[in-house]
Image (tube, rainbow, N blue to C red):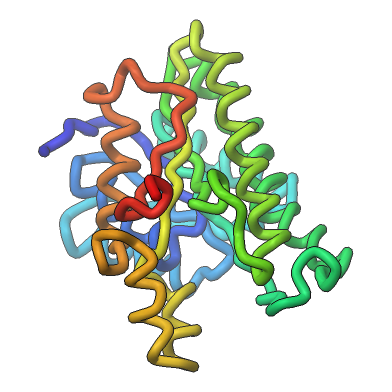
Length: 257
């Protein structure tokens, strides 16, 4: 489906790799000007170069989404450069330290705070900075990146991660209700096992992991970052104009089990 994002501006956090990069490329493919926001400026520059190669328009902004001043600066830079924000994919996040079998009891306070600061507080601060400009423009669409861990209990290795991603779901639904009458839609995508650098580092350590996690999804394979990006772009488009406050699983049937 070809979407019309001409003269629109999209902000994508965590756009230096993985799902964020795929999302930025997807927005650009449909004609949007894209803000490539990431703490990793090398990765962000690579994403911007890919957009340039396809004839798009991109702006790189360095941001640590757990830092309020940097988030505000990201948005002010966007407004200064492009004058508006129509779409936001608040995607930056971390899985943190794999807690192995220690689970709830083995998670340190510092690790829990770091995960909440990036994954949950970061999304909230991005929304807080983005929404006023969308209100001025008469509307907009926000997609937050959750996880299947937003929808179901996680394994012991991702307890703090699961808590942070579950919080994103509550935040999304509440914001969707708060701003529904003002033309702003807020949804959350909940990817399952996706072939990204996040999982690749575990696969590199143990190649059998790929088959194991692929079989957890009834379709029998990992998803791709592009598949998630296409869903994000659709949720921002007029084709989904009736949808807000929704958690969209992108998991090959995992949460249907």
